Amino acid sequence: MQKYDDAMTKRGLYLYFVIFQSVMLLIVYAFVYTSFVAVRLAVEKYDLTFMAYLPAVLALVGYPIVLYKTRKQFRNNKTLRAVMWVMSWASVIIVGLYWHLSHITTL
Image 1: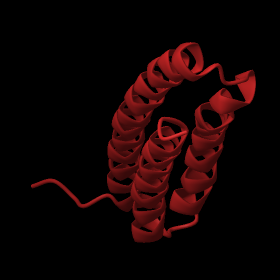
Image 2: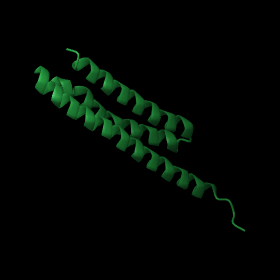
Image 3: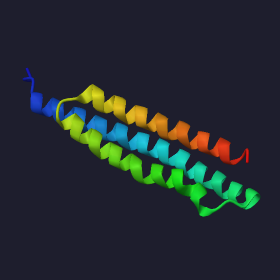
């Protein structure tokens, strides 16, 4: 009969969390990439400046920082809060990028 090991369970749960973060990072970066493509098309069509790329660049740089902070939360035994922060910031970034795209195309 195997004995229950808290440390092994904690390491396994952390591994699942890192995999979850990686998948969420890929999802957000897919939306950031499509946002870059859409902004490039809007810049060509409406003669916008390079500042139209700013929200996509901020999302590209900011989301890994959020993931780093949530790993610290996860290691401090705030697992549910860390998972919710990853998911909520991903949704905020995706909605914000599409809001930005809808506003620059209605100029």
